[in-house]
Every structure is written in structure tokens, then in C-alpha cells.
Length: 195
Image (cartoon, rainbow, N blue to C red):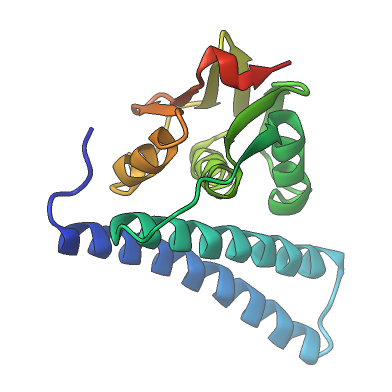
């Protein structure tokens, strides 16, 4: 699947995607801080502020990666080893509510992949968030034969228009992104994986 046609289309898709998510996270933070200022506070409110703040950071970095790619700004690939299991655990710890009804099954383990770390870390966590928001009761993440698969039970609610842009960015460091309504797959070069 290819990116939206013109430069203007790509910029519009990127702007709409990230502005929606950034506004949503910001609204949660503002609402919770207002409640705290009114003396209404509990641990769940604090957790929501922390989760939304973490997601804001991910979306901010992802937006920067996408705009730089679309505008063809010079980008030095920051090729380094990323521990997939650790990154997934970090996402679960910081972006998933302890009260979430969705069980996340992490079958990745401590596997290292050599890639453009800055872009990958941001986009991978955004893809996890997309899958989590679609999951009903379970989100499964597996790694088998150099293919990382993210499967929300019941499939993805929709294929985001920004996915082709993500795929182009990941391809720069040799990661092939495939997706359909059932799952998202990231295919790594065999030589880039170290288990």
C-alpha cells in the first residue's frame, strides 16, 4: 500500500492523525489537572495523567519523524540495537492503564533488532497503541522467524491512512511493514535480529 499521493495529501494525513491524538491526550491531562485543582484526586487520575503524558511524547516524536520524512529533510539513520521485549514492557508499563480490560500477551522476550532506533521506537509504540485501542479483551504480540506480529482480538477497527507513511519510514532501516484488518506485521532482516 502506497502513501497518499501528493505532498499536500501526505502532510494533511499526518497533520490530521497526530493532531487528533495529541489533542485527545492533552484533553485528558488538562481535565485531570483541573480535577486535582478542585481537590478531586485519586491514584487513577494520576495514572491517567502519566499515561497521557507518555503517549503525548510518543506522538510528538512520531509526528516529527513523519514530517521530516515527508519533507525529505536530511536524516541520519540512528542505527542501533533495540531490545523489543524491553520496549514492549516499557510501553505496557507507561501507556497501558492498570485498569485496562485488555490483556496483553507478550511473546517476544529479550530479542534485539538493529534498526533506526529513534524512528522505530516511536512508530512501534504508536502501532501498539492503535492495536490496543482496537482490542476487545486481548492483544497478542509475537516474534517468529524475524516477523513481529501485533494481533488485537477482533482485528483492527480501521486501517489508518498514515500506515503507508509509517511503512516507508520503517523500510529505510530494512523493516517491512504489512497490515490488514486482522493484524500488523513487521518483518525484520534476519541479520538484524540478535536473540
